[in-house]
Length: 88
Image 1 (cartoon, rainbow, N blue to C red):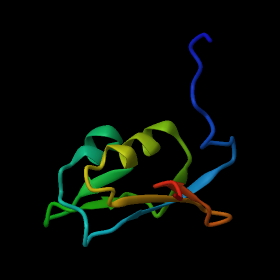
Image 2 (image 1 turned 90 degrees about the horizontal axis):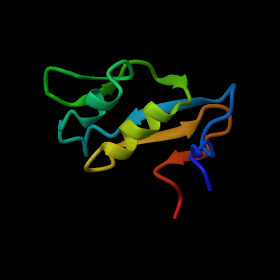
Image 3 (image 1 turned 135 degrees about the vertical axis):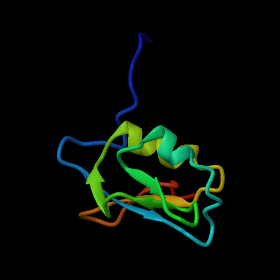
Image 4 (image 1 turned 30 degrees about the horizontal axis):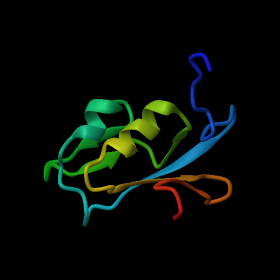
C-alpha cells in the first residue's frame, strides 16, 4: 500500500458542528496549536471554537484528537452523526 490519506471522515460538502465541553476543558491549548483558525482560548484559558460549524477537514479532526481530555466533539451538521469521539 502506498501513501494513502484517511478521508473516511470527510466529504466535499461536509460540515461539522464543533463543540467544546467547558466543564472538561483544561486549557492545554493543543487545539489552538493544531488548528489556530478553528479554536481560541478565552480569558479563562478555556477553548472555544471560532465558529459553531466549520467545513470538515483533517486539521479540525487532528485538533479534536489532540485534546488530552477529549473536550472537543465533532458531529455532522446535517445529521448529528458523531465524527469525534467515535461511538463505541
